[in-house]
Image (cartoon, rainbow, N blue to C red; front, top):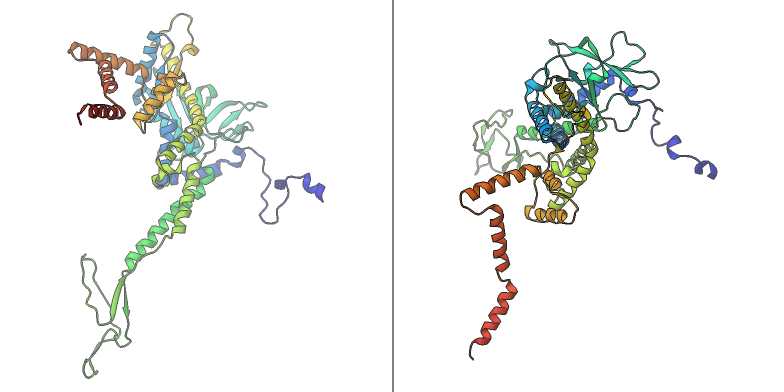
Length: 483
């Protein structure tokens, strides 16, 4: 018996206290066929449309993953200027999107939202118009043609043995009902980019949303909050509770205070009725009668703690710190630590997103080269066009301390001015150019430059006596005073 226990994995043995799960080793695209994928994504879209926590989490994910700025770094100023001009032109929807709805900035946020909600999104490269255009193809329009062949799996034609994607099948969007219709076209893999989330399954050909494990938790949070609000409103609608201490003090019976005889009789079916629609009101109660407002004591503290735990679980699907949602749950330095941990967690997602965006930029650069709008030096190829996508940084929390820390890091060789500027979302070279222009304007006006002002302030600070020197000076002066 000891040998049997020692040579086995607990997870491989059937459990007597929990239900045995069916053995399933197939890739994700087999576990999520069209029907199940549609049901899952429908629930996620409903949560994003009607649940503030879900939409806020997606916005934060877009802010940190998708928001970047373009910087050409080929080393050739003429080429850098041309690349920057082309990148700036892509901010206009008519120069970028086939439907002229989105510029490249909003496009970057949209494809990240599609990837987060649906697991993947197809980006179509359109070479028909001058300069080229791109088009976003939603997940439900990527579907195999009819009748499907053995090599078509969920809209992707795979090469035998290697499983390399050869083509994507795209369906039309019915204008009347908005559903995916008949086959529109099958495009080569080189003319499209499948921007997807694949985290656990190396054989998966379609992406899966990172929110998939917590969709039931998100829906439970939404329903619990809805029912809690409804119960609180029900307590307000019920209104008043009237209490009587004496059994004789019933509605419709009055007695003489001296003889005790009943002097008036009303119908016993009469009930208290008040019109509370006119705001301020007054109650005329009998002796020994009290009236109390009905107050709802729900949800309880335990229920609110359960909701907070569920919110934490939902946000962790996107690696978001809970203190960003509820600032009271973390102090200042703890929130900085959470931010640093999140930056580490989102690096992979940011890199994969930038790889997709770089391929989009290269497509437009290629079109510009073919149309002779981008002139390269002799011998240069498309691969020689070096550029960076720099994520947006965050401002300093404590500018004085963090500026000193950045200066020391640069002095010790632990960082550089360029990296420190990127952390706070500024451009070092642009800052230098603006400082030079400001100093030139100050000199022309006969005023001291910025550096002269800073040097003067530092000299005044160095010349100012410290508290210890003031104390010593006072002692010396007191010794000169005659007794």
